[in-house]
Amino acid sequence: MRVYLEPYSDVRIVGECDSGQQASCELVRLRPDLVFLDVQLPDMSGFDVLATLPPGQRPLVIFLTAHEEYAVKAFEVSAVDYLVKPVDRARFAQSVNRARSVLNRTMEGTVLLPNSSPGYLSRLAIRDSGQTELVPVVEIDYIDVAGHYLCIHVNSKVHLMRGSLRDLEKLLDPADFLRTHRSQIVRLDRIRYLRPRHNGDYGVELHDGTVITLSRSYSPAVLERLASPAQGV
Image 1 (spheres, one colour):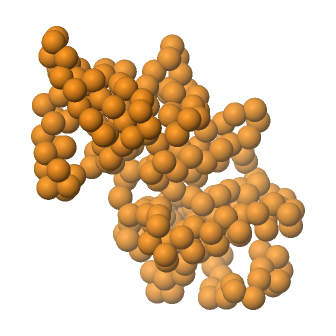
Image 2 (image 1 turned 60 degrees about the horizontal axis):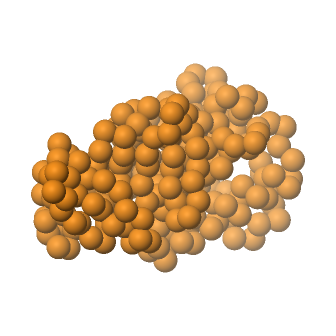
């Protein structure tokens, strides 16, 4: 990693560690912007190292691993990327550029830090055609169910992923997302209009003109949240 980082004039290596315990201490002391963290360390896993840090003190993370099966877990803890060893330079450069982009946008105040909402996802890792696509949670409009799949609606694109809507709901920040139907979750800031229907439900029009349903059983929680000062209504 040190050799691969030499060409980057904007990168300064502030420390190296050969154990998880040492890494935990040094990350608190040095407060780096980015850490390359091996999944399998002599005394603990890279995930255990992150768990020892307060959410507000976690840097951006690029995981290193010899096993692709750790990829989804890496993204569940808001990793910027994961690199499968042996790492080639082209893939390494792509990963560094991704981290640089996140850091630049964060400094400009246009995106949230990956761990700014402790315990909640900032990205979804969606596997498609042999590759994993990172979908920022802040770009999601709403999520619904089609058979055994979850449909993640982002602008005009729909991403499909397997899983339970209930399980995914637990990983999304309730300050941003609420259930509007037993098979549907919406991002609150995407709602433009609420139109009552004769059966007690509401038609919910989103910012792009999409209309979804807010059922009677879920409407009290959604209406209360939309009427709160935090939502600017």
